Amino acid sequence: QDYTGIKIEVTQWSPAAAEALKSFESELAGKKVFMVAATLRPETMYGQSNCFVGPSITYGLFASNKSDEVFLITRRAANNMAFQGLSPERGVATQLGQIKGDVLVGTKVKAPLSVYEEVYVLPMETVLATKGTGVVTSVPSDSPDDYMTCQDLRKKAEYYKIDPSWASLDAVPIIRTPTYGDLTAPELCKRMKIQSPKDAKLLAEAKEAAYKEGFYQGVMLIGKYAGEKVEKAKPLVRKDLIDASLAFVYNEPEGLVMSRSG
Ligand code: ZZB
Image (cartoon, rainbow, N blue to C red; front, top):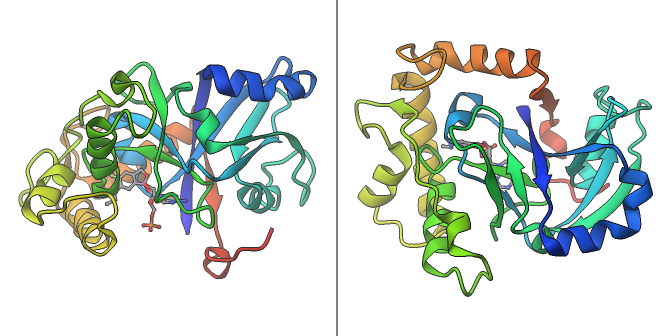
């Protein structure tokens, strides 16, 4: 897969994360930490409303190809990145620290291009450790999985041990499609009567429909390419993000996507 790695900068650790990272203080001193989310939809980044981690996934903090920047991702993503010129030494992933997903919940981050100045890290049970970076940026307007997870987090804030305000940012209209209007994911979930973020089969169908409709029929409602077709805007937004050092190309060989190794 040809992903875009979105660099989501940590601006304030949750108290639990700050505590957990104390033992790596010297390794991390003076460095910016970026949670890197692998996305296929760079054109939707205007609507990022939070950043998801798998609560039981172990993440590493890895040295990047820039001396003052650290990436918070899974070990397997770091290993892949090391072969793509994204680490200090080719083929070598240098780990500076380690932290579990649940501890990161409540951390404040800055998601590039988002209309929201600051967003929170929240738990998503369905994040796969075996895909992308294990960090998922949430765009509830155009991703059915994200929309359903956000709704669930709002309804069961106490169960998830989150502050309700962390999940309170609304979906932002990013793309207009003839079939689903300005909020494709909420509309699809409603029409398909999806009840929970665990409705895996229906959500996979909804995701497929959202991808197709957004890509082939969608028109941008926001940003520099407002009024342009998504098909045209997607590579341009991607290039702008990369040129601004807010993102980079991250490839995942198909055969390795489901691999449990490394
Ligand atoms: C932002 C975004 C906005 C995404 C959207 C999708 C959509 P795919 O198609 O199966 O390859 N993702 C990335 N990594 C993971 C992971 N480890 N576990 C669970 N989900 C993950 O999936 C690629 C998309 O799945 C990525 O693109 C990411 O969510 C999520 F409007 O990033 B996306 C219709 C989808 N819309």
